[in-house]
Length: 320
Image (cartoon, one colour):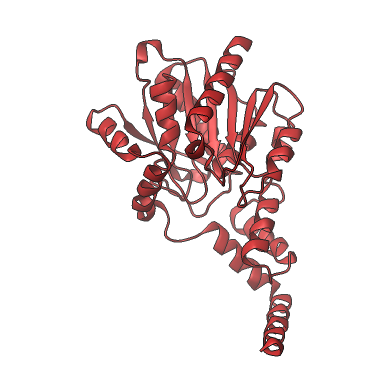
């Protein structure tokens, strides 16, 4: 049996070596165009939202019934229509600012309702929370891993500002949403974008995909990622190596709070330090959530998570 396994393994390696392009196409397709996705996957993510904070979807539905939660669409990057929801602060007359909350890989605007609720009900912020391309109600032909998503977020920023007319905005993302926020942070942005919160984001797409390869496709050589990146570049216009949080963070000079659970084995915990060290200009804070797995820091420590974010925002407000 062992001999048969070795022979099978050798055959697989040979096939991959001879058909690197085919393997690259498969890996690109597997990572960037999964199914189900978008509207088809809304029900699963409603359940996920409630698992992260019980009662989230009932709260969301109640805002819709009351006419407080609105839907809007714009034409995003690459001319796809992209969707977002927005809701005013609990007390609009004394709103403290606006938050844009960005979801993660294969999620949508519903999943991180705990953040929307935290900002609206506890911090008295207005909130806009979009569906990234290929997610939720947004159009798109692939998952952009934050790299092109940042260009959509940069379109949502003035939309949110026009709706709420605030001079203080925070971008807060989780997982791929955190990578999106970090990638956005290195671009020129309006002055009213004051700070960022990233929760368990990866340092770069190539590092994340290589980690996933070792976890799920250990028998595939790393060179296949080069082929997959070339396929992605040819088909969608970007490659895995250019999509880097750390490179963008090197250009960021506005305050940022970095959060990561030290039991995260999906986006490895080491990415926290890589990201933190990459930001060499401006104020920064780090919080390690002990024992928290991927995207679970709030669920494990809701009160401390809330306090950490509230205190960070208060410090940033004092800076201005």
